[in-house]
Amino acid sequence: MNALVRMPGMSPACLAGLLLLSFFAVLEPGRADPPSVMVTICKRAPIETLSPSGGVIGVTEATVGARYTLVSVQGSKVMLQDSSGTRYLIALDCTDCPPPPPPPIPALTNRAPQLAAAPTVTVSNPQPITPGEIWPDDRGKHIQAHGGGIIKVGDTYYWFGEDRSQDNPPGIPVVACYASKDLAHWQFRNQVEKADDPAHLGPGWLLERPKVFYNAGTKRYVMYVHIDDKDYRLANVGVFICNTIDGDYQFVKNFRPLNHESRDIGQFIDDDGSAYLISEGRPLGFHIYKLSDDFMSIDRDMHLFPKEQGGNLEGGALVHYNGLYYVVGSHMTGWNPNPNVYATASNLEGPWSEFKDIAPPEKKTYGSQSTFLLKVTGSKTTSVIFMGDWWKPSAQWDSRYLWMPLEIGDGKLWLPEPKEWTLDAGTGEAQVGSNNSLK
Ligand code: DGJ
Image (tube, rainbow, N blue to C red; front, side, top):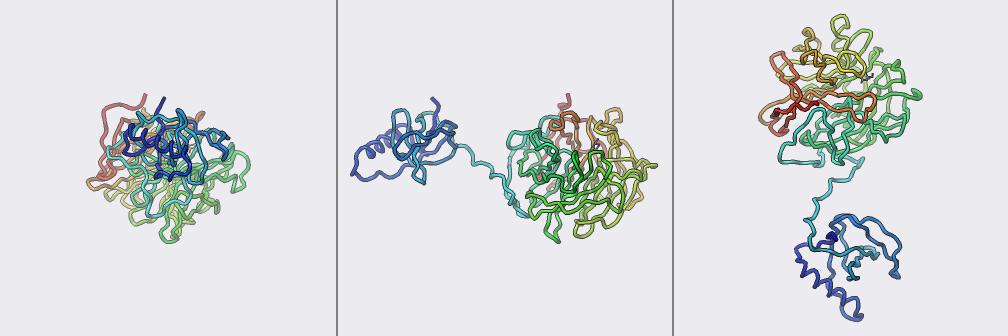
């Protein structure tokens, strides 16, 4: 039988002695109670709940780590008591009990830390990031943050994206939030948006590419999304707000930025904290909009990449690196990959360079589509990570991520062939391995 109870710092022989002592104490009324002995459940196993008269009234699974007062030995079982006085029976076998489990990751909560974020998952050795593979979160479930974006608050990165889990309520687009300190291990925090048609767009309404900004003035988190009817005709942005980063976001409004159609949106926060939306705005082209001071509306159109000059783009992303802005976008081929391109400028208002390929065009961005450019500034260097979605339109819950550190600088940006790689989020150093990760 598996070991079920553990007594800290106690040998099996010693435990047996104590159990015996406790046993006699129970059988000999009138004698003083022995000092109470606490035991800890160390294995998942059935635990029987006893009525006051001693009968079994239910069987559940014991909670690993739960502590009880030892009452007595009952053959091959021990009787335990919790702080409310309820008694239980569970199998006794303490000969090969494993070391105690690590403390659990804090339970999910809507009352998330604000600027001083609670520690999430910490690791000492960098964990490989493998483009194209299932990427499990702390629950072992594939991360659901498609078409996403990342913000850093304190020392914690928060990844928001489309949660396309199969068991989500039908017809309700969901946004999920995950937290990480190393960008490799992600803790699921909350489904931060799962409202039922807040903009009254009818069955099949859409919510895509959520992006969250923190406004230091209002101390509010502001989420922008592409919100649309089932046919993508409305072409609006939607705005949601929350007082905590991973709480339940409340719908505020939807609109067309400066009356322009807007479908895919991207997010950019400049070094001075100013915030921008990148927006696919057919029929004109691709816009970079500056948000107002409170981030609740559009301040102005910084630049339009006209469609006649290669600006027929979506999946927009922007980074400011070594004094130059780099914008990346994908052509418009639905869920199918295409050769993504980039342009550069020393000012967001332009002039911008021509668009160039970010990878060999025949590779079609290695099957992915741009969604975000993440700058990781560490103690030694700065890396820029290309975040792409590898969509699976008929199984969206299984869509994968293609993240790779970019080769970037002096006006050039290049997405290397996807391989397993590691990031030291402290130093900012990215190390690309030798295994091609795409099958
Ligand atoms: C491409 C966009 O980038 C996606 O976000 C999504 O809107 C699909 N088109 C829909 O076909």
